[in-house]
Length: 59
Image 1: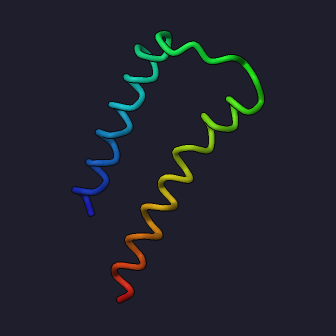
Image 2: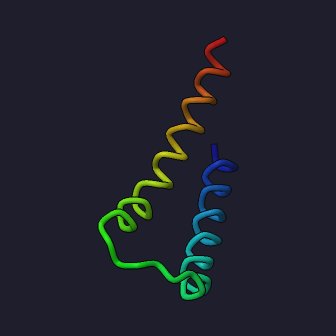
């Protein structure tokens, strides 16, 4: 349990660093679609990963 929390914490720090310092190299227009993609990408990927893991444990 602690190991997975530590992995998530480290991944979160790495992602924050990439967004903070690497984001200026990606020109993104300020549209509603760009905002939705930016906000919903990670939760959708997490839902897919958790759903896949749930299916693997269910069998």
